[in-house]
Image (cartoon, rainbow, N blue to C red; front, side, top):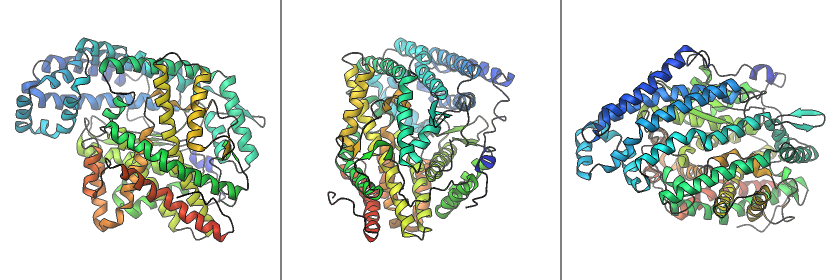
Length: 614
């Protein structure tokens, strides 16, 4: 590490270059593309409505072209908004495009799914047998036909499409804007949400971590954010409840499970395994952490604390890049080259700055030119966790780029439940690369503990989030929920996974933390993180069994995109996510193994965690 390097000086240059998409939000080319898109949708209806029995292949080809043009418009405006979230002109422009597209889609695309669902089986089979374009898209088409029982009347579906820009997405946008405007005071400094959370999670001084969490929680209420989020959630939950009832979904999670192409029983098995096994390993970790910190019980702000001897030096951006590229190259030169392309083409926006949203994400697209791109959004502050976040997001990127080229615009995006596969695989590859090059036993222990902590956040915490969602969706159907109701449900679920007050943690400043979890505005999004983590850990654990064959097999898995479901993806590796033990094996292969090693090293140092573990 080059300690003298100024991280801000280098990092400040790592910004997106979106100029080859559009030169600005008011660019004439953007207006022309929007007008063309609306016209294409109208022509799509005129050409194919009532004719899918004979022209389904042509319709799919045209739909693919429309999707690419839509993606170019949407990715540009979404990325501009993400990095300038409080700019009203960008908000206005994005809303204009979304509303015009939504109106045109409602008027001219609604017929497609209904007409496809209504095709007689023999007609559909004939299309599959005689048109290669239809056959290529069979996985997508089969899924649409399988779920036809949940379709509403075509006029109702049209109405829902027309109003979609004014529903949950608009509330979500509002909360993104408000989040970017939030400010918190600490030690005489005014901080953004990502900045104060970075201190609460990463500062070496426990008093500073606790003060940051206290001011964060207090600030959420003082600025009315938790109250606004409660109102927003009531709208989103209420609207979903009505639609679920009308469509006839079996439970509050069924709609999301269907879109993820997994059955309710498999998702329930995941939740059970995490509650019964994952949470136990989580508590095992916190007991060992408590022993090393010499503090019992821990404060909630200690949950992500590093060990006292961990190397918390800031990692310069270039060191992060070198580590991630080398780690990817150690497994697959193909993947390394794709990551390098993202960096070279300026598809990464890394530094935090005023107006930029929090968190991290990847947005992969297939443009009308046929080029696959992967844009990565980071808030890089130089922590070791930020290095792993980089490895995670570019993992999404390589997945998107490979799948887009292999599957085309209509089937390259994997359902959320296993869209995390490549990102978590990238994290594991980077973690193992760093661990193998760490000589000090103390630093190996620090790495193992940090990885276990991240695993808990990805698996245990996300399933606790999912159980919170299940409860608030269920209770919302009985009436409106107040902020104190959300607080109570939040604490109940937290204690179920992390223990009662005083067992492992004290819970001051925790009750309103549900309010900054923006994923709740996308119902049941969160369990995909746990699904993806354990799905990938089970896959990663069998890597050595296949030797040199594993890399090409894994690349084919990524290229499958959304064309295969979770069971089909795992079949070549001899794994089956329908088996409840699949999820337990994922836990055993990851955090259980890491903690075994961490406890062994700790004992050599004279530190003992708890005997109360499997």
